[in-house]
Structure formats: C-alpha cells, structure tokens
Image (tube, rainbow, N blue to C red; front, side):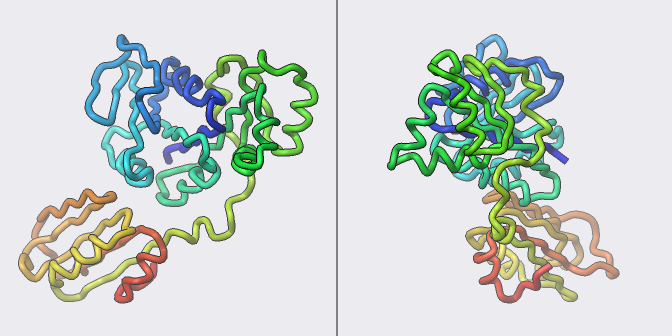
Amino acid sequence: MTPFTVIGGFLGAGKTTLLNRLLRADTGRRFAVLVNDFGALDIDSRLVVAHGGDTIALANGCLCCTIGDSLVTTILALLEQPDRFDHIVVEASGVADPGRIADLAVLDQRLARDGVIVVVDAGSVRERSADRRVGDTVTRQLAAADLLLLNKTDLADDLPPLRGWLSTQSPAPVLEARHADVAIDLLFGLPRLGGAAPADAPDAFASWSYEWAEPVERGIVLGMLRTAGVLRAKGIVRFIDSPARRSVIHQVGNRLDIVDDEPWRESETSRLVLLGLKPTLGMLGSLQRE
C-alpha cells in the first residue's frame, strides 16, 4: 500500500516551506507531492531532470505535480503508474479541511492514510482562531491534526501558554520549528489522533458491479462510464460488435482505455466494476451493489 499524507494549515503558516524541504531531502524515498501551484515552490533548477506541463521530476526520484481540476483523479492516476512512488503527499489549500482530504484514502485499497500534518503559525494562530471570519476554519484544521508543526516560534512572545492552548484544540503532539526546519522522518508513520472521520465520510463513495452472461451493447457500457461522478472503472467485457475478443476496460477520471485483448473464453462472464460518488452511482439503477 502507498502511504498518503496531507499537509494543511492556514494561509501563511509555512506549508510551502515545509514542502520545499521535503523535496530537497535525501531520504531514499520517492515522494509524489501534489501542490496547488508550482509558482510558490522554490525548486533548485539543478535538481530538475524533467519539466512537462503539470509535473516536475527531480533527480532524487521525487515528483511534484499540480493538483489540476480533480485531486481524486490525480491520486488515482499516480497509483496507476507502473513505477509507483513510495509516498504520496498532498498540500491542502490554506482554507481547506485537511482531515477530509486525508479521508480520500478510502477510495482505493492501494492507499493507506499516513497522517495529517497541520503547520501552525506561532505568531498568529490564536488571533486567527478568534477571528469571526476565519476562526472556525483554523480550529477545524487544528482538530484534524495527527501532528502539529508549530512553525515560526521565533515570532511568538510566550511559547508555554501557546502550547497549553494548542493542547485544548488538538490531542496531537507538537513539533516546534523555525522556517519549518524539522527532521523529515518525524513527519511520517503517524498514528491517527485528529478528529475521527464523520460517520458518513467513507459512505460518500461506493463500489458497484454488474455482470452480463451474453454479449452487451457497447453503448450501454459507455453510458455508464461517462456518467458524471464515476472516478474509476475496471472490467473485462464481451461486446456485441466484437464477440470473439475480450475487451479490457480501464478508466481513471476522464481517461478511458478500452483494449481488445485475448480471444474470449466461453467460461468467462463479462464484468464491470465502478468506483465513484454514491449519489451518482445510485442513479445507475441497473447496477448491482458490490
């Protein structure tokens, strides 16, 4: 399984500084780091071995990707790469709930939730938490943490009261730093301490399957695959227009591949499995829930 870590924290806390340190570190592990914008990263050009569109490949084996239109699609596409990465790290936006992003690990059995790191600005977090406009966002982020990285400690007037206050907001241990300078190995393999996922979080997704004993119309299958909210699909199907061959179906997000494979074996049955948003798949009434 591929460990899956989320780095969150309010705007300006130091998430990007931490990610820069991660990408430059020589840990012996190949990280795939998903960010909102390359522009904020300060990647040494001497480390870049390839730069194409929405990805930057580094000499240490790490890859930096922009999230693009769909975080889910980007994660699933990484899992489909033949040379899989050792760890996937996602940068949450400054106003996002990192705990909900971490719960995306339920999407695929190849993912393992490895923890939520929330970067905290020691100089401003208490003021932000009391702000009626953003306070709820800040406290929700703190509550989601499995590890609090208390950054910019040089800007805090009095650390002991701040540590005490943080303990009332989150059960997570606190790692103190300046300029997000921490030992990278301390960030991974975290036990889950942040707020438990809402009871309905995994229930937002569903896996459905269908079997056909006889050859099936290609248009019926394509209609299912093109339904909005289908995130992933796999199957081997016998189509009416090519009954002598096995058609192997593989879909991640909007990318769909259908390849005619080996001759069809009479002992086989066509089978299609979809993973997607539960309300969407629920509309496909002809499917039988797996």
